[in-house]
Image (cartoon, rainbow, N blue to C red; front, side, top):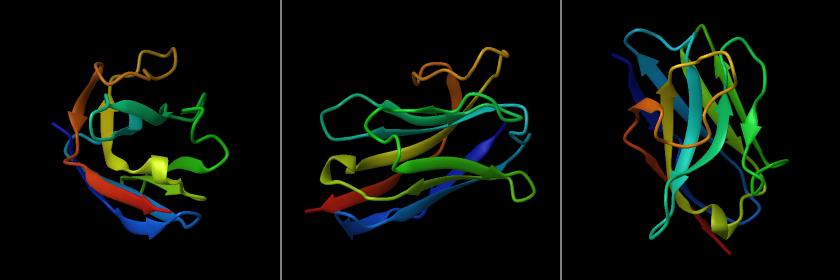
Length: 126
């Protein structure tokens, strides 16, 4: 069973950058869909970015396109989310997740993901 641990969250001013990391252990995730999700107070958990194994279509939420970038380091078994030009509306708890890949892109809803990290808080002030 995969275990996921996020790090890199914090409090920053608008316009600054953060890089989130998600280290994995267990079976590994090289053949899994990996994703970053976020949940703001009073809102549903939403997909920020998803990454299929071996490359392919990478999904970004419209609200983060051009500002966020998802990537992974296979050797380090680590997933990243580079977040630039942060906005107050990016404030949320950010989670990484792993899910099965069926060869047709990665899901962009939380339900199909079966392994989750504990989350890391990102707070952006204006």
